[in-house]
Image 1 (cartoon, rainbow, N blue to C red):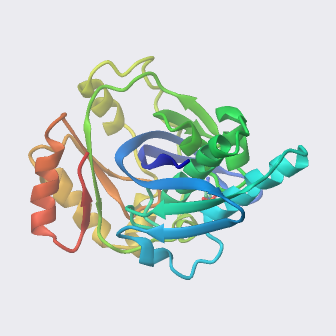
Image 2 (image 1 turned 135 degrees about the horizontal axis):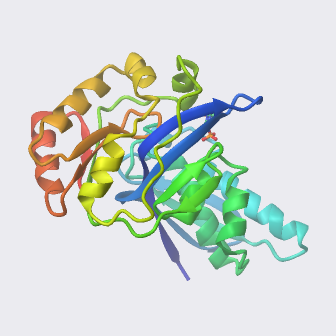
Length: 285
Ligand code: C5P
């Protein structure tokens, strides 16, 4: 039996930094959505735990002995052992299509998909809430990736309030090809006490409503990230100048940026941007 679970890119449509905890973690107020682009996790029964990585960005993870995927698997095993339930092994394959260290939660999405896949393979039946809580021990973004729905996110990432269904849109993701370590970006912040997001409407009825709302919000990590990777400015300028782009912003701690477009118009943006900048990673969807 093989179980395959998608690990879609997490996109921060808006991200306000509103405080800092005594342990150094930052308090966030963010709107997240999930793209159609993503990695994939496949698991099948085996005696021991093993991980192999394939796909376009596999080499970026080579040599990373303690991948977040294996840590997720071991965490679920340990929970089962605590409950005196069988904790078998698994052969895990990670198909890595997302650039690493790029602000779209790749590692967190992979860890979340691993928890979901192994929960099923091992008949743990922990349910989404418990898996999300477990995921919080692996990284601040893992709980929202386990839930996997557009949401307003608070705390350091663990308070996830799903939004109602969003209007249809295309989300084009563009990365200039430079990895960016999240702690480095947070460290360069000049302000950590910014105002929270404006209150979202009870439902984003139309794309105009969503674009209007997001236009009044920010990504507070953008300036710090741009100081480390100035190409982020070029990506944002190019996206914003495209005739089909409704809004362009950076996601997470960067360097990936997104363009929001009317349904069906994302592919055109991706073609134009990818054609002009062949060195950039571009994904439409
Ligand atoms: O939790 P995760 O391992 O994804 O976070 C990576 C690093 O990013 C943390 O060690 C911390 O330095 C920073 N971070 C933060 N505030 C958050 C999330 C992450 O300062 N809410």
